[in-house]
Image (cartoon, rainbow, N blue to C red; front, side, top):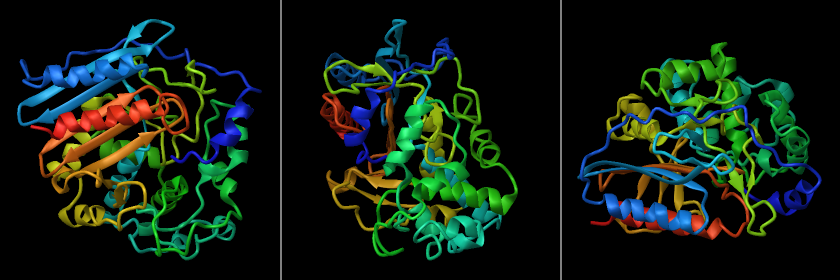
Amino acid sequence: MKNKYLAWLLPALFLFPTGCAKDIGHSADCSYTATPGHPKAAVYQAVLDQYVAKGLPGISALVRDGNGLWVGASGKADISENIDMKPCTVSKACSITKTFIGALCLRMVEENAFALDDPISKWVSSDVIDHVKNARESTVRMLLNHTSGIADVIDDNSFYLAVLNNPSRKWKPDELIKYVYGDDPEFAPGTDASYSNTNFLLLTMIIESSTGKDHAQLLREKIIEPLALSNTSYYWHDPLPANTAQGYFDLYNNGTILNMTNYNTGSGNGYGGLYSNVYDLQVFIEALVREKRVLSAGSLSEMLTFTAPVEDANRANGLGIFRDFLERAPDEYAYGHRGRDLGYTADMYWFPEKDRTMVYFVNYGTDAKSSLKQTFFDFRNAMVDAVVGL
C-alpha cells in the first residue's frame, strides 16, 4: 500500500482511541519440522534477534535453501499478553493477497470465465464504469499488472476517516469503489505502471460477475484447499485462527508502539485480507512459480510477463506478482510479493537463480513514517543478504 494519506491520518487519529482485537486467541500447533543442524541456522536467527532488539515487536521467518529448511522466530506475537512469536504463528499477509487473487484470476481465465484482454466494462456495471476514470478504457490485464492508471482507494482521506470512525467494519466492494469516484487517474491506461489497490478491488468484482460466485469461496476452492493451506484464512470471509499475531505501529512517531490489530483498511476485497504463516506461504509460492503446479504453462508465462521496472520501487509488475530486488546483482532477483499495512508487514519470495525461498512476517506496520521504518528496511536487506549469500 501507499502512504500519501499519513500526513492527514496521524493527527486525525488523536481523536479516536486505538483498539486491539482481543477476540482472537493464540494457541498454536507448532509441530512442523525443519532440517536438523541447518548450517546457516545461527546466521538467520541472529538477523531476527538483532532487529527485534532494535524495536520490531515480533518476526517469524522461513528459508529454504540448498541446505534444507530453516524456520525461526523472535520477539512477541502479543506484547500485552507476553506471548512469543513462533514460526507457526499466523499473521497478516497484507498485499501478498494480490498474488493469490492473481493466481485465481488466471485460473478463471483457464476456465473461460473471462479473458485477460476483456475490457472491464464487459463485467463491471455501468454505474461503476461511468464514475471511475480510466475504467472504460482498461482491461483485466491492466488491472493485474497495475497499468490501468486508476486512482488508489487507500489514498482517499474520506476512506480513512470512515476507517477511523468504524475500525473493524467489514467492507464490501460496492462501498469501497465509491471512494475513487471522479478521482483523476495517474496516467492513460497502458502507458505506465503505478500500484493501485483499486485494481484488485475491481478484479474481485469481475470474478464475481463472470462466475456468479463469491470470490472468497472460489479462492478457497481453487487455491487454498487444493494446496492444503490449513493455516491460511481470508478475512473477513473466514474467521481468524486462534494463533493470530497482534499488529503494532508507532502511531505518533514518539517511540511508543500501539496495537492496531482491528483497523481494517478494506480486507477481504482482493487487495488485502489474507492471514497465513511462513509454512503456508512457502508452499504457495513454490507451488506457483517453482513447481509450476497451480497454473498451466501458458497462464504462468502470462503471469511472469513484467512491465518495465517501476521507478524508485526496484521491482517490475507481473500479473499479481513482482519481479523484485532489481537493485541487487542480476542473479538475485525474486518472484513474489510484498505485504504492507497499518500494523503488519510480510514478504514472500522465491529466488529462481539461487533456488531459495524466503518468507517472513513482522507484526509492525511499515507503510508509513515511523522511527522503526528504516529498521525494517535494514532487516529486509540483512535477511536477503543472508539468504542469497554463500
